[in-house]
Length: 265
Image 1 (cartoon, rainbow, N blue to C red):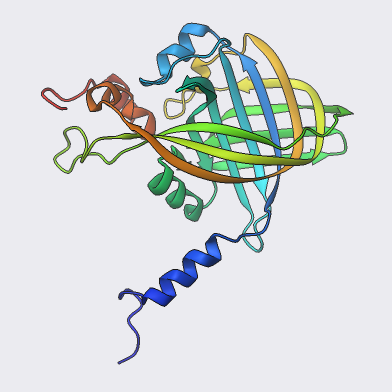
Image 2: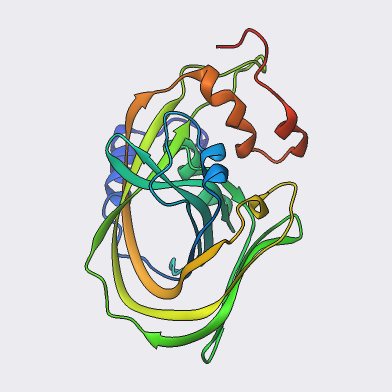
């Protein structure tokens, strides 16, 4: 009988696949990063417990083209500054990706809030524009011109916070307790430039980042970077406390008006 490809893989095949994925070469991306201060109460409102605001109400948008061999990827995120367990990091609200393959690993392994979307980074001379779009709406756009080259920062470790969960089969609560994940990334930069420009937030019922207004622009940069990442579960979290925020993960705008199901835990 010819091999049935949906059938079980051998232990050797599974081990070989795991070994191959653990020894990937550096993958470089070209990305625009904008950071701004918004209203403190807005940041506090989007953070599920046990995450807490930091000393500054910062928002960060990252819009990148990733140089995957034969499979270029557009990747983005909109995140707010957050604190947990003695660690300052970022809590992403939405992470548009241009390919399904980039969604599955991040969502299923780490709990990343990834969604299919359009990601563009364009440069013509000194003029740069970058955007994240979904459902035909470019809900974040960064535009400007390069004005100077910046010194290369030392390699740094950064932390993102994710909630990993599965909605319950019966539609009420979760199948099992949600977990909070600390995802650490070791970042190296080989080129970095400052951009003078602005950030435009457009109204979208699916990606309402317009609720995070730009009160003071901190910086806009364009750079070439590579990162690795590792995640670890740091604690199980209250289902009751997380349920009111679950609508952030999905596209039904009516879910924004839903409370947690009665009697759910």
